[in-house]
Length: 350
Image (cartoon, rainbow, N blue to C red; front, side, top):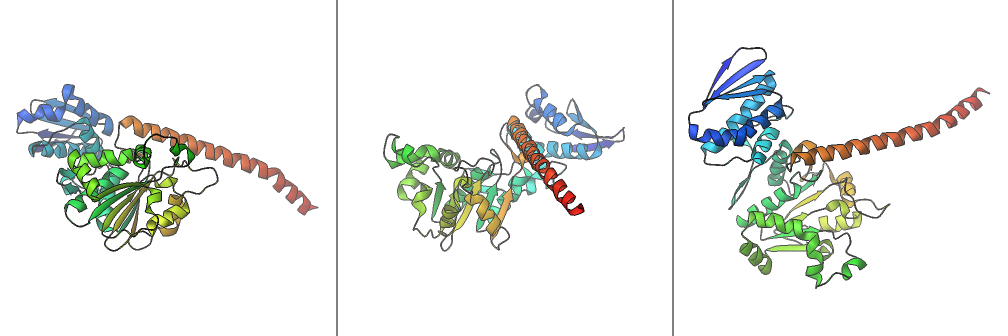
């Protein structure tokens, strides 16, 4: 692939590709990949033969060119391209990201099923934190890959022999009287709460291997209450949905770490299901531990959502409504304060 640059209003870059057989995969059905890049960067993309020209604001053209190069390199290495990969490349080339790394230089988690690469700038930082720190907090909205990447790192370390077991825990918020009415034994009762962790495991390992490792104790999936009184040595521990822990529960889990262990705590502070008036253990832990050596905190944003693009817009809409509600609340409080302040000022004047 070669690049030919010409000067026109704004900036135009022309890319020339040397393997026509790969072009349909690069363009997508009905050029949908090119259309997605146009929409994302506000540029004009035109194709003719084995050439693509990109025209627009220089910074946006540069970012779009980086995406095209990264996708082409992926195809040249024998990989495939889906709409999800195109969206991921667009997020990684975000002109607001600082710095922007070439796709080939990004960190990745390597399992025997292949490399798990970041699909947003926040994920790239998170993967690096998972490799470097003993305790990592991943906080942010749904769909940002907090739990999925933590499970991938856990499986990678287990397969490499760097930990002896993986412990996955989740609070069962309804695990009081209501849980008792569900059919089956304890495992049957709590499995619905732990299903997202099973789903992530099955993406990393063959189904029979997941079952075998669970039976041998190399992988343990348990509700939070089962962690009390234990010391977890040479283990990779993941606490998911941590926003639904209490401060006491959170302290209990964090102090389970033993020699040679690592822990990842994930959660979304906008989806707390605890009873009113109960402080989230995740919020309390962040206020207490952020900044300590060996502790890393990754706060994902809406641009890190890697599910359907509509999910990011849904999250943004809810955030905007909550922000407006908070502002209305502050305005009501200010309105209540005005008469009191006026009365105090009048009293002072007298």
